[in-house]
Length: 52
Image: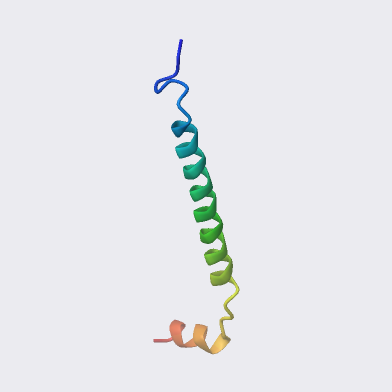
């Protein structure tokens, strides 16, 4: 049995591109989350939010 698309290299090229793009997107998302969780929350902010 032959794979759909045969032995044409473009399928491998597209798959490699998508894999790299997805990996880069995942790293960017992790970096964004990492930056969000390092923000300092002051106790006065918590008090204001709790007593409004």
